[in-house]
Length: 85
Image 1 (cartoon, rainbow, N blue to C red):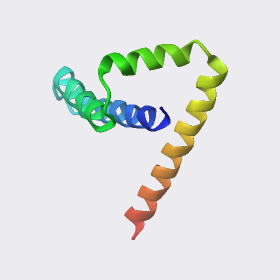
Image 2 (cartoon, rainbow, N blue to C red):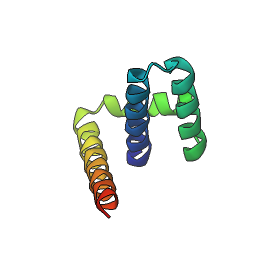
Image 3 (cartoon, helix red, strand yellow):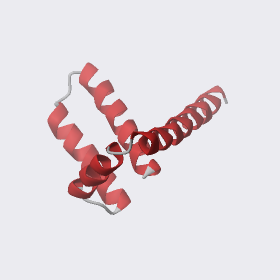
């Protein structure tokens, strides 16, 4: 679930960036999320059901998002290193 939430955060970041560029957000959002679901072999319904399940357990969701944030931070650091090279 951590990897799916990481990818969902990356999708949201990309959508936010595109929104600032004046692109058509609904089409972009649907395309990005469709790709995320295909990549992880799930459906939107499964994603939403899992998110709702984990949201019932705040302590568990907090642990998951701690891992999500750690993964995103690691990705950001690796990207910054690549840009410097």
